[in-house]
Image 1 (cartoon, rainbow, N blue to C red):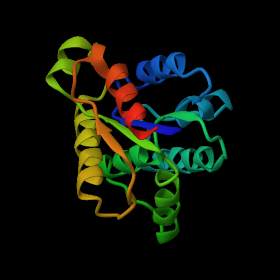
Image 2 (image 1 turned 90 degrees about the vertical axis):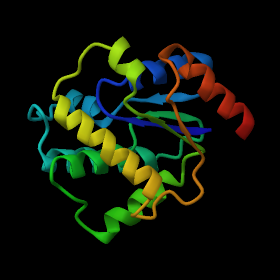
Image 3 (image 1 turned 30 degrees about the horizontal axis):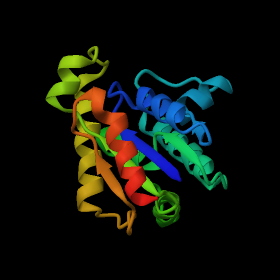
Length: 178
């Protein structure tokens, strides 16, 4: 299965990806583009600019083009569209929308992690609170309005459960899909 985990920064995506990878050792864990690009020497602003979110969007698309049939992605290209919207940017072309559609429809499951009362109470405060909230809202709009028409029939689960139940909820969704 190809699983994409989406959500704003400081929401526990990486922890969930690590937990899912432990439970599914036959799956490849794919780090988020920010980390991979930094490892290659790319220096981002703090916070990244809209053009830097576009760089991450394109890197994410490249990761999604890899033919790994069993992968867990820490972030999806949709995350960067949400960050672009939250920071005043937009996709550059119709080709970007088509590439986004192709990437997302390659997923067997899209896991969306929204900001909840539990996350705000349980997780350490994240930097850039306004950007974090704006990205969260933009992501949820993109997912539920699908104004770009990029989700097609992608299976989706929103994790609004307590942090300790996230892995279990995703595992149940994967069992239903299998």
